[in-house]
Image (tube, rainbow, N blue to C red; front, top):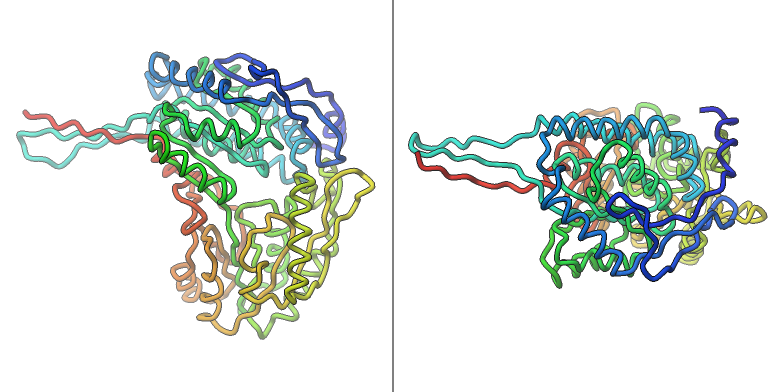
Length: 494
């Protein structure tokens, strides 16, 4: 990937986007559209079809038909594997196109997006392609006159609703295992990050995925998302996004067919640095990356920096110095370390959190302002508050922006208490040279992922999921297949 290759793609015109249903592009039935506004400069890139309930109905009918009568659920696992590998091949072939398209849509810096979006998505499709003929049923340990079989079967129609921060990566986490298990999918991307997923649907069709197996409906969550949540013919709904929307989807399930709803709802993750960390300079660098990359728009972002009191002042100064030096700007410049905030509305929310933290008595060490306003884009300085009390809003509420709260602690027990003083439980990190302490902290912290002497980077081989109000179920790893398969027992008298 070279800068001249990126620049050749940055200004290409984008045709008005339509829905993708049963292998065809279709407008919304009401003819309504939404503007796609680039966070890079506030310009209008194109339009999306604004799906209504009738459009969602058409997509679900197409998925149900493909599941009930089509070839995909009945294909041999080896045949599904070939198609999934071809999808991965095409993602890799079009990787730069997909990455630039996504960056223009959501603002992630290209150096990160290229790896995290098409790079990760291709790897995810390959992983589940290889898993599809290796995950199998069971023979139960029964008496000699009985044969007990446990079959794994696809659940049916899967609705997937994905966010705007890493649409291609998170979309693949849901689409690939669902398809590998033999299901049919209706995908609802975020209004502010749909372009790369619409292109993915085209590539899936080119790879040989049959009509109706993957459908994409774009539009407003309050309309299209609600229609998916309430539909009686959706068997499973997988969602990544806010807790408010997650609760609403659970209500829709209760009001409809009790569809299974799997939720990944973000977090307020503690990044805990002990005085005996093996390399405090490295810890400071990775801690900064863990909150400021992608302008803090990462569900597992280490947004609470817990530092042992004896090193607090020096360590916070290290992180602040790194934050102040970070290159924030054009996401399509390879030198940029932090790109744009996804939307004007998200930027306003971030700045409101800054104002509230200052009003509550937190000490602003660096950042806190909108920058590069003359570009028309949505950019914000990496921001660090010190002297944050665990009861302050900044220590409790997810910002989803480049805002870090530094909190001192006295000892291991104090660190655990503060780390767990949250309604969330998605991720955490511990920096220490003590192997015993590391194991104790992994057990004590209530989170789905606990990093030790690093932050982020867990690959497809391990599950990602939360506890408490960070949700339920898991993306990634073989465990993701559990969401998209049913167990059926055959009890056979011999």
